[in-house]
Each structure stands twice: as C-alpha cells, then as structure tokens.
Length: 443
Ligand code: FIX
Ligand code: ZN
Image (tube, rainbow, N blue to C red):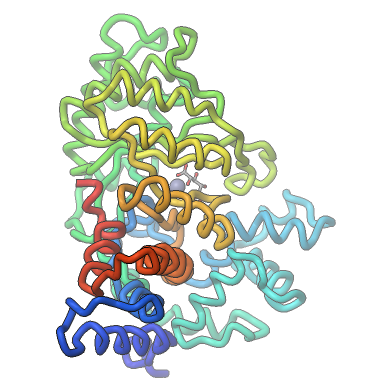
C-alpha cells in the first residue's frame, strides 16, 4: 500500500486555488497590484489555504512524550465530543457499559451509530470525514479494519510530520501539567524536545479547588500549607518559576468556572491568582491564558464529555486587566454572549488579547459570527482560532474547516473595504492574515 507520503492527499483543491492566487500576486506588478473586490475572495482563499499557522492551544504532546500523544482512528473516534453524540444516538446505552468496552469497541460503536447508521453531519463527525479524506481513505467504509491497517504503518514521529504538513501547522502549544502523574515522570526524566511543540504551564491541578493540589505540591517538595498561610504563596510562586523554566513555557493557562470573581476575599482561587500567578507572570513577562466559563462535569457519567458552559462575569476580566496592567491576558470565553462582551472589554484594555472560538463555539456558524464581530470591533488585534486538538489527526480538520470559514469572513470584510475605496494588494492581505495566524501577537 503506498504510504501517505507518496499519496496525493486530497487537498489538491487547496493547492490549485493557491496557484491561482500566486498567479494573481505575481501578475504584472507582482504583489503590489491593487485588487478589485471580485478578485479578493480567490486571493484570500489561496493565501489562507497555505498559510502556516501557530496553534496556540492544544492538548497535544511532543512525540517524544510517548503515549501521551494520541493519534489514529480509535483515538479520533473516541474523542469526547463524539462520546457525547453517541449517547444521543443511543439513549438506551448505559454509560457504565460503554466505559467497560475496550477503546476499539467504543470506536466501532461510534462509527456504526454516527457514520454508518446516520450521515455524519455534526461538526465533530464531519471533522473525522475531513481527516480520512485528506489521508486518501474512504470515509464511507462500513468498518474500521482498513483504517486500523493504514495507521499501523506509522510511527508517532512520522505521522506527526504528515499531520503537521497536511494541516499547515508549524507550531503547536501544548497543555502541560507537572502535577499529572503520567506527565510528571516524563519531564523529570527529560527528553529531546521537538521545537515545533511549545510548553505551556497549566495551573488547574495546582490552584483550582484548593487545597486539592496541596498534597501533590508537598510531594514535589514545595512547603505549602492547606490554609494558604505562612510561606505557601512564596512556595507556589517557586513551583511556578521552577516549572516555567523546566517546560520552557511560553505562557501559563487556566480554565475558570463562570462563578470566578475578582476581587473575591472568600475565594482561595482568586487569592492564588492574585498573590502567586499574576505576580510571577509580571516578573517573567509571560502571558496568562484565562479560559472562562466551563462548568465541570454537569453530567459526571460522560467523564470528559460531561463538561458544560455558563455565562461568566465580564467585569471580573475588566477589573483584572485594570489592576494588573503589566500582565498580558490571553482570554477566551465559552458563552456566546461573553464572547461579544470580551470584544468590547478588549477595546477598553490593551492587555486583553481575545483568542480562539473555544469548544462549543468552535463550529462554523459561530466561528463566522465571532470572527466577523472581532474584525469589526478589533481590526487585526486578536487571535482568530486555536484547535484545542486532543488527538493529533484533529489538526487536519480543525484547521481545514477554520481556514475556510475564517478566510471567507476575512474576504468579505476586505471586500467591503475595497468597495469603500481601499483596494488592498495581495501582499498586504498576506501580511495581515500572517499577523492573525502567525502567533506574533503572542510575542
Ligand atoms: O480546559 C480546556 O483546555 C478545555 O479546552 C478542555 O478541558 C476541553 O475538554 C476541550 O478539549 C475542549 O475542546
Ligand atoms: Zn483545551
């Protein structure tokens, strides 16, 4: 069987449109040709299709980190988005029976129910179809046997190269948790880093639901006290500094419930953010990513698929940006209403950088709405998307789908600009979308 490397991945349509736009760009006066409104969609589509992107939030891992990096058809199909959907297709299915199945059994069931018995119309289902098609596989297969045989021909390293090439992703920010029992020993032992995979220090296990994290911090040698008194704060700052260095972390990240408030003298979480996290961020000039609005485990039976959303208080974000003006806040919010409020808050505070269409907002209909709103309110001063990929293969679909939707909205906005009298050149468009997707706003 020819390897993927020799296959022509089914992205020819992307390359051909790029060739068209390159011809446009390299026409008589090259990239300086002023584009008519009618030419703009073709040029944007071609440039977007081949734009190397920086993915600023994922749950992927450096291939050298072994089994932590998930990939292949069984991981793709047992993604928690699809787990939630299979229970809707099969309300008779008991959660304990599903979780008792081996992963291959779960994948077989999900494939049968969502891809064979029904057309895979949801965004998460269509994503799997996009991945299989890009790999030159038939998404109408009735069973997973051929897919499993295909993936058996790869190593994690070679498949990582294939996926990053197909997805056009040049940098991946990980989510790293030193308190995670599976991840901690890998960092302690050390491994040769893949420069495409960048470290991020995730804070949830250390500071959420205090004192849940205290025993693991103590076991690692940090003299914390469950009451947050004494030298606990300095010891937590020491933990943050130690691991920011060990991970070569580019930012710190935390997911926050809709009930998170600042100020809040009753909240250990707010105390830890204000007295440990934000001071370290300021001293090291590192951004803090706040991912706000998740309601954990509203249905515990679904495990990772059991989380939901709630509307958070934008005033908390405004007050943090106001009181910690030297800290750069990367912010994404899970509720659609909050996403609009965040746009306005970012207009008021230059240290708020909205990013991504997160989780339940990461669907074409809402990506379209959010991106249009952000271009209109923030110009080019936001990061349009991240993948949140948990399975390596997902980079292919999350970025293929997002490039098409975001490119379309961007082309519309620039088309309106041209009709208003400012006709851009292809070189300027390339410059502007490079600013949006290249991770430079994070520098
Ligand atoms: O907190 C997070 O990083 C969330 O993105 C995840 O917890 C969530 O499960 C996810 O992967 C959403 O896309
Ligand atoms: Zn995430």
